[in-house]
Length: 202
Image (cartoon, rainbow, N blue to C red; front, top):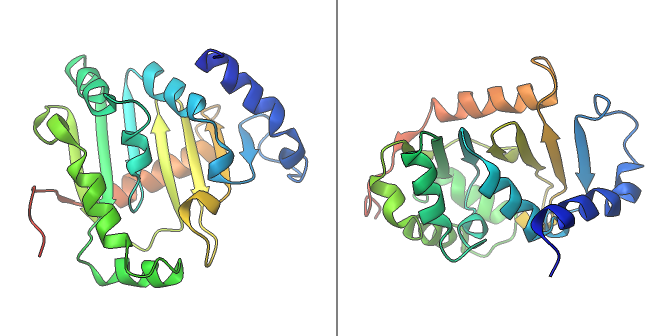
């Protein structure tokens, strides 16, 4: 099986046809994938394993991140103990907006359960210093997954499921670029979150 770095490199070549549709994305700050499902697991794993300073995950429910490796939560916890800052923002499964999003994505009432399932997978992260877990009630227009100076952003499409959304793989090249704009969005959303307390749902 190819190494994670090799597959990540292959991904950049494979996405060239989709990237051709983009006229300009701040030079080489971004690459584009047609959908989230086109992003190889090896790329996600490489980003997770290489991150040493900052991990920010902001979305509705993203259990796939915790399923990338059998011990993904333990790996993230170890990074916290080594000094990394980790922030995980999930949608509050009891808020009315989650039901609206569920209807918009035609998920037939399953989104609250998906969020609760993702929260149940956090394991020791719930009590790990350096890992903050919050719940938001924001109307999101994209999910953001930041690993140090790289991130994956998924703009939402109406009536599309999470895996059907397009995905941008960004790297930080400028304090005024696309990466910085989404990093600022993470800060604004995080400022609205309330701390997650296990079992604090109806």
